[in-house]
Figure 1 (cartoon, rainbow, N blue to C red):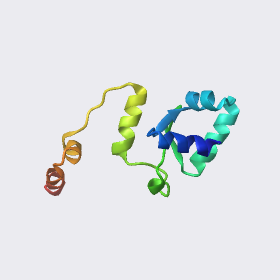
Figure 2: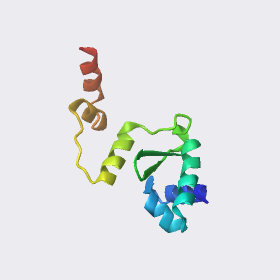
Figure 3: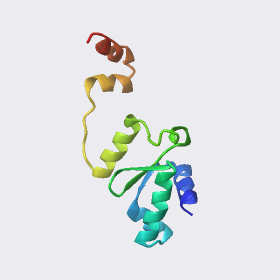
Figure 4: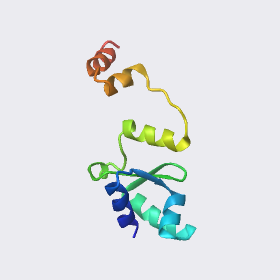
Length: 108
């Protein structure tokens, strides 16, 4: 039941959900939802970086049990409804100025 729910979310393009959403959509009790989510976290299919938020770990990252920070931070900040700042060197990674990032690290 939980695995099918996650597959449906991924198929629709969603990468995260809240504990309230899964309880409402699957009509589960709090304890049933917690036990099912625990099993998925144990199998490294989900992570919970913030209380109540669950992020689906794509298959290529499941052996690590996490997702890259550049994917995780926007999800967390959206959930918390908080603005955030990307540092200059990290911004280089996002906007194609990767050489500047490596040169800055090399000069240290």
